[in-house]
Image (cartoon, rainbow, N blue to C red):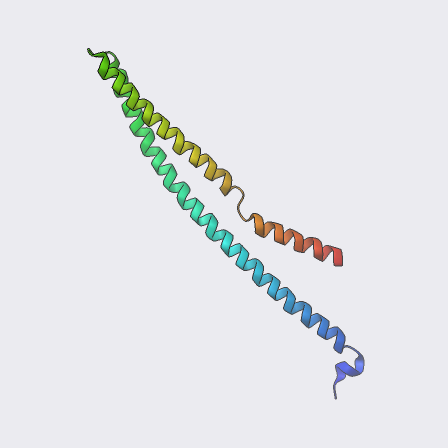
Length: 131
């Protein structure tokens, strides 16, 4: 004897079962989305670390060349001074380019998991609307 049918709960149980299955599928989709965004954040963080190391190396080199340029400035030949200043300026431009790349990457890292947050927000609004 089927007690659920007799009590009229069979349709109710079917709706709950369908809702549970749909919820499980939605949760699996959200986890997959979060995993993809985590991989993206890891890749950006690795690139950020490489850029910071590169910036450190370029900054040290630029400061050394700037010091050399200042020393050469007071030397005998004006051609040596021009070359030293051009080299120091070139390294300074390279440092600025790397620093701008680091700032750009840092801004993009601050927006991590945007899609996951948006999807979870939409899900929460849908749930609140049904309550």
